[in-house]
Every structure is written in C-alpha cells, then in structure tokens.
Amino acid sequence: MTYREAALACPSCADLLEPKEVGESIIDVCPTCAGIWVDWFDGELDAMVKGGKSAPRDDAREGLGAGACPRCGRALDAELYLDSGVPIRRCGECSGAFVSHAAATALTKIESGLLARLVAVLRRFLGPATAP
Image 1 (cartoon, rainbow, N blue to C red):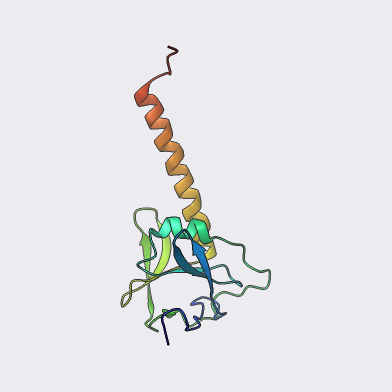
Image 2 (image 1 turned 180 degrees about the horizontal axis):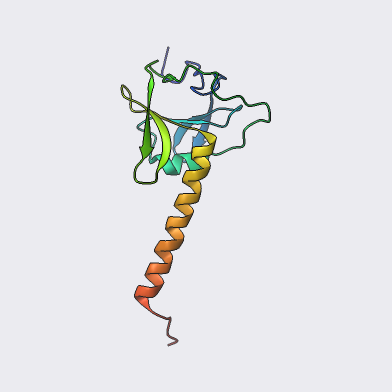
C-alpha cells in the first residue's frame, strides 16, 4: 500500500481524514471536527493550516479519537507552535502535526496580526510617501 492509499483516522474525533490540496502539497482535513493533519514535508505549518481551514460540523465531538498519529500510530505529544502559544499535537516518530479547529483559527489570527504589525513597522521605517 502506498503512502496516500491508507485511510487516516482523525486523532481528535476518529472520523476519516480527507486529502486536500494546498499549493503543491496535500494535507489531511477532518470533515467532522475540522482538525488538520500536516506531514512534516508538506510545508510551513501555518501556511498549510491557513489553506486547509474549514468549519466543523454541528455534530462534531472531539475527544473520541485515539490521540495517536494517523501515519504511524504513536501517541501525539502536546507542544506550543513556535512562539505563538498555540497548542498543537506532534508525532515524535514521523514529525507530523495535528492542529485542532480552535488552534487553526488562532494560528490564522496570529499570522494576520503579525503581518499587519510588520506592515506598520515598515511604514514607520520608510516614512511618509513623497510625491515626485
């Protein structure tokens, strides 16, 4: 069986994850709880999450899944994504990451906030625009 042929169970709700293209990568999104699985080689986690974000179904029940890596079955470790303070779960074996819907929402807001702050700093640095 090849890498993409195996059905993956959501670590959070146990529903089957669905592949979704984000740029040139394929991530796995849960149609029920809207959690996102990103393999280590897919790309920057925040960019993959932003491209894969969806809404959970009304009947979503998190916590029914095994909390295990959908690729290798190892228990996922809780960690904070970079210095954002957003909790994710990562596999210590294959380095894939699971991002819950709530964490994906938080990452999207942080990224937007960081970009706005960067633009503001650049504007202050460059000064007011002058007409030719």
